[in-house]
Length: 600
Image (cartoon, rainbow, N blue to C red; front, side):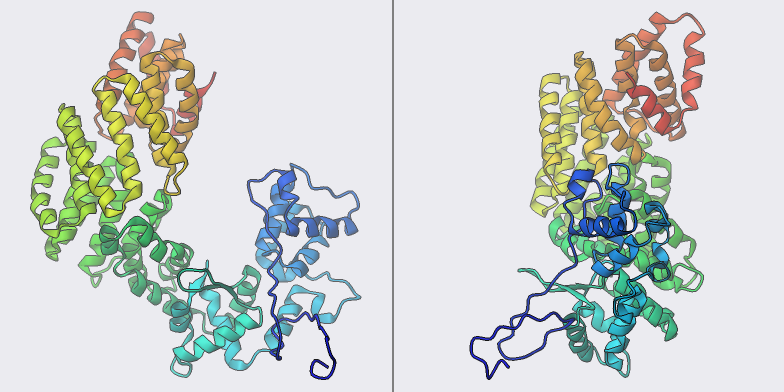
């Protein structure tokens, strides 16, 4: 028809291109998905939501998208990848199930989504039948590659697909061609940007179907092992690269593999997995949990890996786990952090890794300062200096000056501490460590506060908060620290309403990361200054119990706030009354103390 008829145009829909002369391919994506945090009005703009609501009304004419059900509807649409048939089949269930119940059953979506129109073709009456039909049109080798790609979560590269899906009978070069065919057949999504290599992914529905085929072929464990091995190889240099590479370059290389690392660790550290791979991957991926501010999850995964360490585990793998576990504990758990970092120092010393030893010594020094062991911190820094000076890496050197400044501040020399902080800031910027540079700006504002210039400190904290709000590298912990410190300075200045506003934003962020207790003294002081002495005493009791249990000394600004607070409490209460309130506060947990302190 195209060759014989003049000016003929054909519009055809197909799961793959027709591959005829003159064909212009326009690839249709799944419907647009809603933002999980959007209002009902904003969510209604999503194409996926619009289709779901329209089809739901066929079964329940009174069905409406409301503020009450919008999040659940959005979750259904997102989990079904915006696939029209899947949305129609899910919407058909609203006559018998609530939206929440549909969500609960989507883990077994192929059993749930089976109620298609009798007028439709048989392959369109259930979601499983549709995928069976598409799968049946593939060649045997295409089917093999598709099912093996099911192990990837969150996308994958061409190299990853070639490594994981190949075997003795299927070379990596063949996988490249077969992957291209699966993209052409709309079973694999290709994300091709203007820069960098293409990245691929399976829609979650397709991935679930392919995983079934993988299990039926009896290949699940073999392919999951290859998947974990690929990630081990990829992340092998990640800790060293974290010390050498600019943040953005490191994140571009490794951060996109977060979901793949998660699923690989889940398998490798399971009863049926391969613990040697799990331990190696956990240690190698340690920087990722810090870089993505996933402290709680990272600690859990590294602790799980540490439990699987055996007599054949390499010293390097053990050293990495100990170091990054200690860094993830941070100031929230100074005792645990110190123990893990001590072990890392021992292991790096055993394997004669000078850079690893120097960096772990700096981390041990930071933990020692946090727990009040100042002499030990000075010894660790003294040993670390020549090792890091020889390595000439800006980021580890910046960490050295950062920690040395921390020690000087805690031991009463804020002027020299400022010099070290400023040197650390310059080195972080030279290293392309923009997140660490942002953190140092907060440290410098805190030091200005310690030096007594309250107005300059307020201005510095406001500037730091503004930068953090506009940076993609910001973490809840960093923003929380700056807001809570701003609240503390404002309290000392007497700007109590502004202090409460800053604390209400910052303290929940810190509490979520386990660091809220560090700033509780300022909340207690503010409560006393507005004549809420009972609240002040209870929060003071909570703060004292936390510092005591963690064996942590207060920072200078917090120590000054506590001294002023207790002068006010002693002047207000009769003998014995304050002790009872302090005891009541000592048993509060973090969330209770935060809520209690921020009430009107």
